[in-house]
Image 1 (cartoon, rainbow, N blue to C red):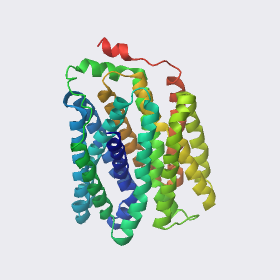
Image 2 (cartoon, rainbow, N blue to C red):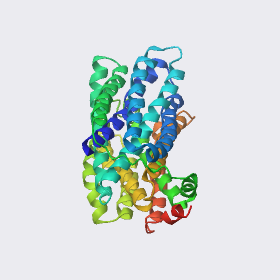
Image 3 (cartoon, one colour):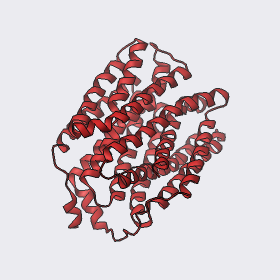
Length: 394
């Protein structure tokens, strides 16, 4: 079963990478501004937020497998509709694409929450290690995504990227339907008072804020990296070479995640997460202010290494501190991830459109995310796991 969950992580990555891989070409074809390109990612994040919250609750009542199947179906259908629908609508492309990105985000949000909660469900005692392994497969999908997209767009166009993802998702859906999966159904006794108590818990809110900031630092660079290195006068890379740089970033994350789980087990949540924040800030600052291509590539790789374990380790931290109703907990955390995925790339695009600003300055948002994340992590990791009594007493 874990192999199928790992494949879901990979499919999720390829879905999330499809828009960053194609947005530069889409913007050129349909004459989109920076804020419009950012809005496509924002609407996807909105869909992910709503679906992750509902999916987390639904998994407690109807079972994890059923809910995950629904998420896969939504994501697969959305890929085909983006390619076959929005791809052939020129006059109203932007409006249609906004709607379809919400749908794609819904599928992604359900998969994000359920893939993580199933990993914890199967390996509760070593969740930090297995979550990092699962997210390593996510990184593997993100590595393959730009390579496959580069090849497909060389022989066809941007729509072929979404078609490919849809077909890949169909294969995973087939495997999931005919596999045994931990259900988790029968927890229908969960009451809204439990959810309200969780929502009022300050520490839980800080964990969710950390997830939003972590994904903002990661996806903020991912979403705009290709455009940055293609338009920066110091680099002016081709699409293939820009995509290759993005692949280097994900290779670094992939390798880093195999080691990060062990780092957490042998040190602590605080040490590993704070190390990521400090290293990420230094490497990204160097990348943004160098005109040497070789150094820029090195810093992108280092940024990937430092950020590699942030998200899975924060998921593990949430599971460690809040063990009751994991579907709701991880659904909420996935919603926070969707919030960060939508807001920060949109913010970067909006800032880059302002007078006297450019994409280099706008990418400073990623640095700000890491600085604030460091402060929050330092606070929440000094406390023992807790928060359950508030739910039990709700």
